[in-house]
Amino acid sequence: MTACAVAALGLTGLWLLPRPLLAARWTYRFPRAGIAAWLLLFPATAGALLAAGLSMALHLLPAGPGGLDGAGDDHVGGPALDGVIAAAEAAVVLAGVVAVGVTVRRAGLARRSHLRSVALVARPAAHTGVLVVDAVQPAAYAVPGRPGAVVLTTAARDLLSRPELDAVLEHERAHLRARHDRLLTVAGTFAAAAPWLPAARVVSRALRVLAEMHADDAAARRTSPFTTASALVKLAGSARPVVGLGAAATDVAVRVERLLGHAGPGRRGPMVLGLAGLGVLAAVPLGVVAAAVVRAVG
Amino acid sequence: MARSRLGSLEAAVMDVMWTSPGPLTVRQVAEILTPSRPVAYTTVLTVMDNLFRKDVLARELAGRAHVYRPRTSREEFAADLVESALSDSPDPAAVLIRFADRLDDADVRRLVEALERHRDRPDATS
Image (cartoon, rainbow over all chains, first blue to last red; front, side, top):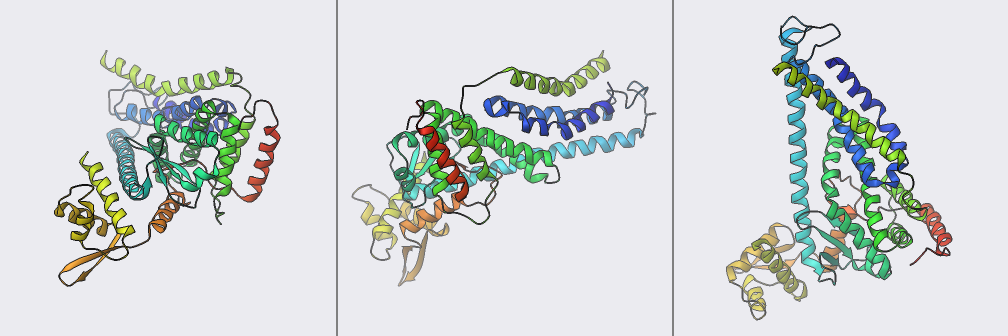
């Protein structure tokens, strides 16, 4: 396979894969597998592009059909093109690493500062790791970190039944245990950094919904799907209405309907097939680089 | 360790400030705190200076010493804090992970009806 073909595969994947994955029902039935599938998109698409660029710049592969095998400079573009590709690739990777690093650091600072403020008004709670704040606005949220914390307002505590409260706390603890924040922070960074790339936004949003569903399942196991759904409707419905309703609000409806329609995990076939297919695609760029390196060395 | 101790001292200082009927000097706060937790004047000064720089406390010069007062009541502070956590500003970095976003009334009605239908089922427990 040539470098151009690998690059084309990556670009095509970037164009074609998000839509069917978004429509795949199994990702909602198996949120963890769904998260894994979306993560596999990174090596399968961006990874393929990077691998293609790398092998072209380093002459690990012929640039096109019938091209020369690596060595000489007498290929399309010549050393100048090699330099441009290598520099562009290094710049993209470096920018990505720096952007993620900056967001992670900023988020960490914002979380610590928020927790310091919460500590000023929080009351000791019966549950460990839970901070109760006196406020008329019903709310529950997780502040990720080491250790993370769950913040609950007195209004939310009064609004929910005991089992519903257990569901909410278990949901938030599941977020913290699974470190969903890392996932969402990285995906959110790319979505914010590349608004011209629809796939980045789609991935970020899909991961957000699947992380919520994963946490919903933990809450449903601790209590029941019905109790979790009921807690969701109570907390989402009691908040003061706002003018600009975020897209995320519709996700609440999807989550409630999913919990109420819960009929066991269902068939695994489509999930296994989907993951396997993405796994193969994700392995292509790795295989290309590995094979080319082996040939160049040997 | 040191940070969490300082954090709990911040909370203790704010407790004093929020329950005090009027402005207080650092020395007065240290004196009120001392019976329950022995604390050095300079430590209280550092904590209160931090709280001033974070806009939690306001201060003005009265004679030769600063007197401090809370910028907002405890209730307002808590309400602002929760409001900022719930605000719909985009949070791409997932600083906080909220349990539920706000729903509009039509969605709430529809979902409550769906819940009611399921309540009668045998597997529903609440």
